[in-house]
Image (cartoon, rainbow, N blue to C red; front, side):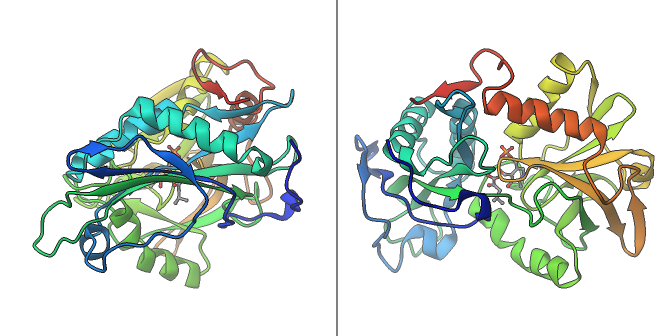
Length: 340
Ligand code: PLP
Ligand code: COI
């Protein structure tokens, strides 16, 4: 199979339509059998549930070319399970996780020419999503839905790749204590847009959202969980209103079982940030992006890892995780789905 003629190394995190997408529609209480289609456009009612009341959930995962030339995905079963949870919370029908994993397989295989080569620094990003498609005018769930996965080749999420970034403690709230912060709903991102534009205008790469109830504890950023290093310990938030990041959960396993680190999931107070040596943002898109400084209303918390490169512990976590994804490091049982 011949790869597409793309300058893989210069890709940013953007959308480029590829040959095929997977589509399944839900009508009269059932999903159809689903198919790969060519058309990247969607036509629907002006009154569709998603357009009026934002009834949409999504996922994000990647396909990688391994060192020995296979195409693989990373823990797609966990994305499928999380999408089930997201759908339930928004009163949408569940697209079964087994079908999700099979749809991932089909769409990656069909777009194999778009999976960036090993060593290029790029990957194929998959965006599964689901939305209410029939007319809804009273506030209620739709009756018809579409599940779709498109793919797009991507480079680093943050400009500069592995260079440390500076983030700010936001004055806006991302997630209410009993809200939707723990699911991957489009609405969580719509409400973060003003906050991210504000942060960018002020020269920051991302927002650190404190907990909405007390504004004393670290939650996460707009598109990634936050990890901290203190000595030999990996410390992450255990808040119930953050997205349960698959990358973060994988890093916790890697820290404990591959690197002999201690792992602590707990409340993390803004007042203790200065005690950490390293900080990073983790997620599918971000992988691990090192944080050099956090600005808390003018007070700068600078991590000892500095602004030049990843700190040593985060570097080890990064190398081990990407090593597993690219086939250089043996993966725990069940983490890698070989597509071809
Ligand atoms: N938190 C938020 C708000 C996100 O959008 C993402 C991205 O998916 C993550 C965390 C990271 O999750 P994952 O590692 O499953 O991609
Ligand atoms: C991902 O990491 O897959 C995400 O969905 C984050 C998104 C904000 C790009």
